[in-house]
Length: 289
Length: 265
Ligand SMILES: Nc1ncnc2c1ncn2[C@@H]1O[C@H](COP(=O)(O)OP(=O)(O)OP(=O)(O)O)[C@@H](O)[C@H]1O
Ligand SMILES: [Mg+2]
Picture 1: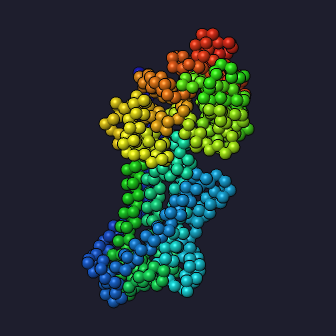
Picture 2 (picture 1 turned 90 degrees about the vertical axis):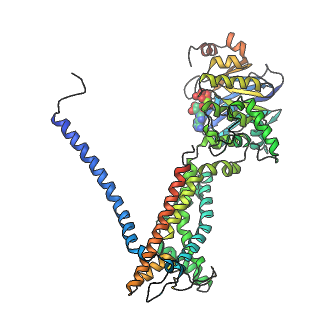
C-alpha cells in the first residue's frame, strides 16, 4: 500500500475541515472588503446618472431648480492642477533627495516630517493655509490658496513613494553608470529616474486622486461659491466639485440635491479613473528590472 | 608581498595598497604592475579581495559607504588618489564590466552602447552609428543585434547582455578594462564568445580579468596574480604574481600550487 494514502483518521479529517474553513473565511473577508466600494459606486451611479445632461455640464448651479456644475468642474481641474504643479516637483525632488542623499540627520528629519504630515487632518492644513496665505493676501480666498493646501497634503505622499521607488532601482545599475564615468547627478537623472519612472508616476496619480476629493481644507482657502468663479487664480473665491456636493447636497430643494448626486458621480469617476490609470502605468512598465 | 620588478612599462602601478570596509581590512599592502596591451588574470579563493582590488583601480571602491583606501594607484604615472583628481575622469580611463550583466533597463541596445559617451562632447548621428557598430563588433555581438538596435537591452539573453555591457564599456574608449568574472553566469558558448572578444581587445586595450576558472585564466591571460587570505577575517594579500605560464607550471609558493592544481579553493 502506498505510504501517502492513509485511512481518513480523525486528525486528518479535522485538519481538512480546518483548512476549508480558513480558506472560506479568507474569501469571505476579501469579499466584505470590496462590498463598500462597489456599493458606493453603484449607489452614486443610480442616484446621479439621471441629472447628467448638457445643462449639468455647461450651466452654473441654481438654487431653486436643477442647475449645472460647470464652475465646479473647472475649479476642480484648476485647483488640483495647480496643486500638482506645486506638489509634484517638490515631492519628487524631496523623494530623490531622501533616496540618494538622505542617509543622514537631515534625511531622517525630512522622512519623519513627511510621515507625520500624512497623518495631519486635512482641515488643520486648511486652517494653516488660511492663516499663512489667505490672511496675508488681504483676506482673499483664491484658487492659489486652495492649491497650496492640497499641495501640502500631496507632497508627503509623493515624497515617500518616490523614495521607495528609487530605492527599488538595483544598485548594479547605478554602479554600471558610475563605472562608465557618468557623474553621480547625471546617473540619477539619466539612469535611476527613468528606471523608477513608472512607479513615481503611479505615486503621483494616486496622490492627485487622493486630494481631488478633499473638501475641508478648501472651505477655508477657496471658500466655495455657487456662482461664476474668479478668473484670477491669486484673488477671488472659486469652487470645486467637492465643495458643490457639500453645498448643494444640503439644499432644501430635492431637484438641487440630485445635482449634488450627479457631481458625486463625476468626482468618483475622476478619482477612480486616476487610480486606474496609475495601476495601468505601473502594470505596463513595472517589470523593467 | 610586492611584485614590482617583473614588468618594465606598466599602465597601472599599484603601490602598498590597503583597502578597508569600515573597520574591516579587506586587502593588505598589495603591490602590482599591470602591463600595457596585455591581459592580467586575478585568481584566488572566494573572499580574498579580488573584486575589492579591481574596484580600487577605478575608484569604485569609494562608492561603498564607509569604504576607505590607503596607498597609491598610478595610472600612466599619475596617482588616481591624489588630491583634486576627479574620480569621474579616472573611471572614463579605467572601464569596468561586472559579474552580473547590468544593461540599463530603460534603454535600447543602441542607447545602452552610447550611454557613457553621450555626456561628453556632442557626437553626430553618423559618428554614433559608427561607434555602435564598431564596439558591438569588438564585443562579438554585432551580427546578432544589428537588426534590432532599437529593442530594449533587456530583451537579450544573459550572454548577449554581457557582451552589450562590454561594448558599452569600449565605447568610452578607456585605456584599461576591468572585468569581474564576466563569464561566470554564462553558458560555455557565451563564455567562449567573450573570451574571443577579450583576446581581440588586447590589441588596443589593457585588460584585467578576475576569474574562478583556471582554464580561462591560463587560456586568455599573459600575467596572473594569485590572491590569498591566510585565515578567516584576515585581509587578503597578493600571494604571488608573474607570467601566467610560470604561475601555472612553476609556482613559487605552496598555496599557489595547491590552488592552481585545484587542490583547494
Ligand atoms: N560592500 C562590502 N562591505 C563590507 N565588506 C565587504 C564588502 N564587499 C566585500 N566585503 C568583504 O571584503 C572581503 C573581500 O571581498 P571581495 O568581494 O573583494 O572578494 P572576492 O575575492 O571578489 O570574492 P569572490 O571570488 O567570491 O567574488 C570579503 O571578506 C568580503 O566579505
Ligand atoms: Mg568577487
